[in-house]
Length: 82
Image (cartoon, rainbow, N blue to C red):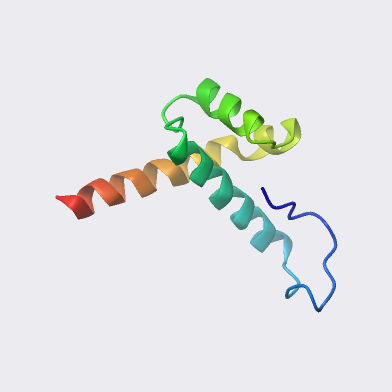
C-alpha cells in the first residue's frame, strides 16, 4: 500500500491535490475489495482493508466510496464479458 499522505518532493512525483489523493486512496481500496471479494458487505470490506494495512480512520472515511467504486468496476467487467 502506498502512503499517499506523505510529503513528496518535486523529484519523486508531481504534487497531488487533496481531491487527487482521495480519489487515488478510494481506487486503491476498491482494488483490495475486488481482490478479496469483499465489496458486497461493509463488515467484510472493513476487515479486508484493515488486513491490508489501512488505518482505521482511512477505512471509516472511505469504505463506502471504495465499495461503490468496486461494485461499479465488477458490474462493468461483467457487462463487458457478456
